[in-house]
View 1 (cartoon, helix red, strand yellow):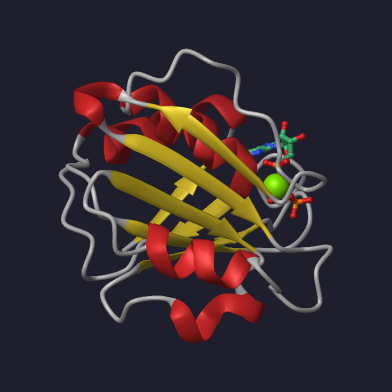
View 2 (cartoon, protein in one colour):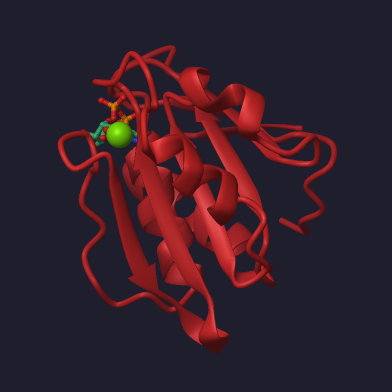
Length: 144
Ligand SMILES: Nc1ncnc2c1ncn2[C@@H]1O[C@H](COP(=O)(O)OP(=O)(O)OP(=O)(O)O)[C@@H](O)[C@H]1O
Ligand SMILES: [Mg+2]
């Protein structure tokens, strides 16, 4: 399913709807160019997980962890700056199989092999400065 959003707020709202439905154990791979809106999407997802902290891009820290509703946690990775996952590989392998964790990854290429088959791959394209075309995978069951 392809959803067109025309503002940052609409992108967040879409992600919040998805975030509301999460139960733990989900893995999201966010695909899109620099500035596509991947981190913006995570901000909305976090709202749906009742996370109150500000979501900051993990582009320098590689990973950030947030406590979420219902004893869940959100882990947000950004591997843009890494050419090899190194010791992060073990952490990612563990996180993606933890049923209390929701894992979201930007620039996942170097950990692709560790990601479960049933992950949700979301693609974001930006035809103009403010419009985004968000492709949701068929395995993501969400009522919009
Ligand atoms: N419809 C929209 N949806 C999402 N972001 C939008 C939209 N319109 C404009 N923007 C702007 O696009 C930028 C998206 O930045 P964001 O950090 O989310 O991108 P990113 O995909 O995470 O990039 P990077 O790969 O560098 O981490 C923000 O400045 C945001 O305000
Ligand atoms: Mg980002």
